[in-house]
Length: 459
Ligand SMILES: Nc1ncnc2c1ncn2[C@@H]1O[C@H](COP(=O)(O)OP(=O)(O)OP(=O)(O)O)[C@@H](O)[C@H]1O
View 1 (cartoon, rainbow, N blue to C red):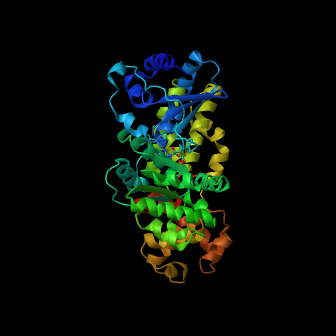
View 2: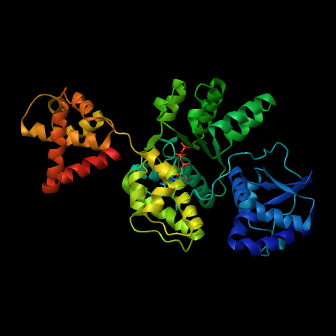
């Protein structure tokens, strides 16, 4: 590709992506060779390549093909020395707004081709809804995304399925790209780490492997539990980890559980993972789920601007779908698509129709034991007193409340419930349930207790 061609491509891209994007993301690119229809573009860092590939590759390819129709794919290759050029002012002759770096003949020898995980442009801090269950993880993620001096190493984020670990990891990487574009940020899953390691072993390129991983400024490894039980990968991970910590480079790790609870992970790896800041993403609560739904509705509205959603629907979903954010998001997407297909507004009837399976699957299975424990805690009495024979009102009333909740929230029969309450007869349970039903109408305190307990048991 000639310099003139590349310059013209730049002029056209500038018009499409705007001056800021152009200066930050397009100008530092230099084209390398074209081989078998693939044009190599040199980029200063892994992260840079990922970002451009994710956000601009289609546009670039389109413009490149106008000049060179033989090109049908782009390949991004790191040339580490470009890190300085990316920040350096353009030479005088190139100081037009669309100045692009001069083409270099080919990829620098020894440079690595990028095949790390692409980043999801939707997973940013702006799109992350913060609530009590995730506020600490969010604050820690924000701190490392500032790219300042390393204060805790590693940052270890853990939590159950679909609670936002990957979202936060991507948000950190994207924020760092904006704040510290010169930093070499490497984000990949533990599975990809293993894959690269095995490939390097097979191709006898361990030196290259070590060089790549030990020259990053920030290493982010998602789902680290994957390497449990994989001894050589753990070993290599351990050495990479130590080398980076020694150089005060930031490491960010995510997993589905705390380091100490990952089975088949060597103790020395566990203890390394524990030595920084370990924060967990707790299961969502009602308020966070509602906040997330409200923010996702705004996104859906862009695709379905005329759809009407009745009051109370989001509250209903936040109340009923408690499993994880991914399911919540999926339910909302399905609801909007369905309503737009049938051309109706989103009301309760349509919601229950469309999401019947999700709502059924999300029905929280509460056990008799859980109810007994929560109720005794709530009334501050001992569990044994609630189940035992004492007839004092201060024990009998909580007992009846617990029986009532067992009837309402589990599929247990009256005789079964009686058995779990110290072998009482089913008529005693029936009497207790009826009594609470009456009191619920007349006694505000009981009604409030029931509401609180139900919420606590459902969350
Ligand atoms: N607090 C939040 N605000 C907005 N979206 C969220 C939030 N938490 C999770 N999500 C969304 O939920 C989905 C699942 O999140 P993510 O993939 O980050 O979960 P995860 O914890 O990495 O799960 P897994 O263990 O399955 O990898 C994503 O679409 C993400 O954007």
